[in-house]
Image 1: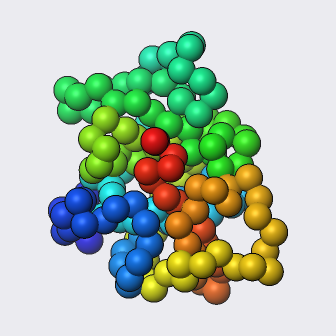
Image 2: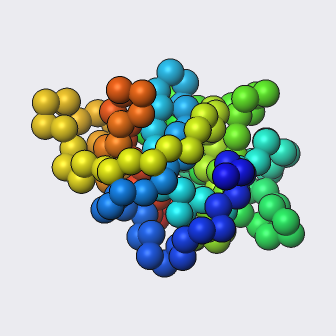
Length: 155
């Protein structure tokens, strides 16, 4: 499957949360990795210019046009780790299916994986900055990855 597009699922069924075996896009934010429910992803793009919106707050990197539609670009790194994501050779813009007006700036898009999420966060792991924005966990290459709750990020 082409990791830039995902025509498979109805985004209304996705709900942004992790509830069953599914496909996830693994993204990197610095040295940390997270999973995004692939049903929520329209496409993954290389960075292109965006306009900074000064009064938008720290979680918004800016606004840009994607295929003629204005979208808000959320800095996922700032929201989850407290570190700003910056445009580089490996950075990617994850354009969301729903809400249609949103995209995520990430340091990298690494893989599409299948997995069954654990809905309950691991009680042995202390809740970090990312805790309120995770819908569960999936495992990739033996590492637990937090599943990003898209609606909490862009809501």
